[in-house]
Image (cartoon, rainbow, N blue to C red; front, side):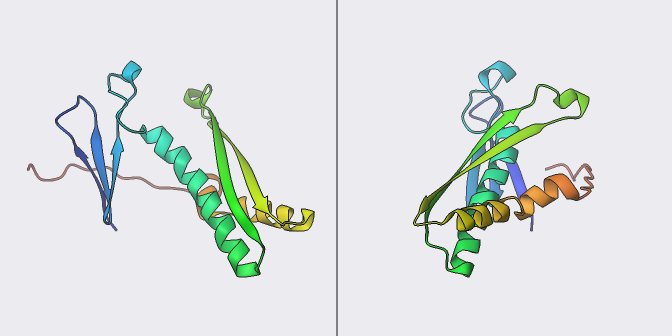
Amino acid sequence: MTITAIRDQSLPMRHIVHVRNHLISTDGSVEEGGNDAGPSPHDLYDAALSACKALTVVWYAKRKGIPLEHVEVSMERDASEERHGVYRLSATVHLTGALSDTQRAELLAAAQKCPVHKLMTSVTTEVTTQLGAPQ
C-alpha cells in the first residue's frame, strides 16, 4: 500500500495525506510556521495509537461476546525528553456497558496488545528515504 502526502499550495505547510480512498489534512502549528489546518505528524502518530487501542477493544469485545457499549481512548503526550530519546504516551481507556471487573480488565489487556502499540514498542522499524523523479 502506498500513502502519499501532497502539498496544499493554499497554505504555507499544509499537506493532504491520501490513504486508500481517505484524505487527511495535516499541518504544522502556528508556532512552527503552519496554520494549524490539521493535526501535525506527531498528532497523527499519537492518534494512530489511540485509534488502534479503541478498534482492538471493540474487535475483542465482539469476538468474546462482551457487552461493550462505548469505548473512548484519551492520549496524553509528554515530548519533553524526545530529543534525549524518550517519547512518552499515556493512554486512558474509558469503557461503558454492563461490564464485570474481569471483563474490564480483559478489555484493558486487549488494548495493551493492539498492533500499533506492538509496532511502537517491540518492533524495529526500518525507514529508507530516497528522491523520486522530478514531477
